[in-house]
Length: 386
Figure 1 (cartoon, helix red, strand yellow):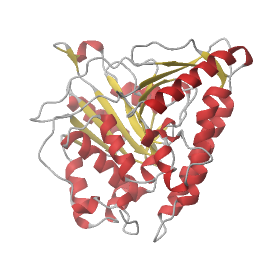
Figure 2 (tube, one colour):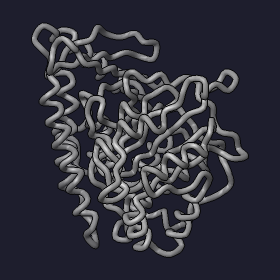
Figure 3 (cartoon, one colour):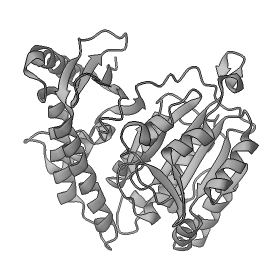
Figure 4 (cartoon, helix red, strand yellow):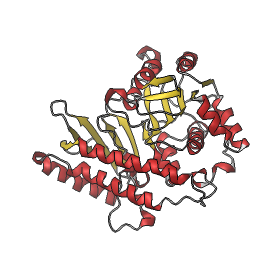
């Protein structure tokens, strides 16, 4: 039987610099929370994202070799994993050690372990990059030990209440807002094979269509009405804003204000309509506290987001974004199943993306349609063999 691990990370308002970590099983049974120092974990997270950033330079080589980068990233991932249990304050050492023993037992004895993190934005860890590797792990096996590969992992904001969201019907699926930095999108799509570019452009024209500005997003949102919706952004970004050009940016707070829904809009029998965001821009995961997208996509009716942990090469990003949309909207996979498939398929570039949405949500029923063979290569790179 597959093991289930739930991690709840909460800020301690009265004790600045600490967070509590609570580990439970599928029934909510587990341990009393223990306090850990946030600062060293945040510093390690920054190092991990810096290594990911360097992957982009390797990716541009004719025959990329990621071996050294994966070794470095696995080392930081192991430190992050250990730090969750060892950066405790002395008074909580016993609880931390008991939690570690339990986690080791579950992950060692249960195949197909699922890990769902209820996270606080004060601790923006790249949870998929934590690693189970150790000093004796062969380098060829390091990639498989990242949590994104070793477990089925997803993260949600710890105040989110996903509810019983409905799955879109076969005859339409969700509405799609394609929010694009037009210059970045046209440059990236122009560098693709014509057939790939045409497929991507056609897909993004699905109702309700493209938006090339923050104002355009507001207009498209009005066209969605009370329907289920996927918001797809492609362009340059930070952990605090999405950019549509040098003079037009959409902050996380503005994003939240535009796309939030009133509770009266959401009811549909005993189900809720949803808004799932795919923020395919540089480092959209890294914002902290109320100015980041983890909280901005957590309002009632919103289902979090899938976003980038570091700056992603434009060509990889545009192809990855399309394949993810295809898996969700055409093949009807759940968020976790789609991300798990891509993490396994695109080694190691898919690690750029983190899943910060309820893992079991499905945005569509399966529909006819297949990706062309040009999407089959590892990392969409002709210099990398499968």
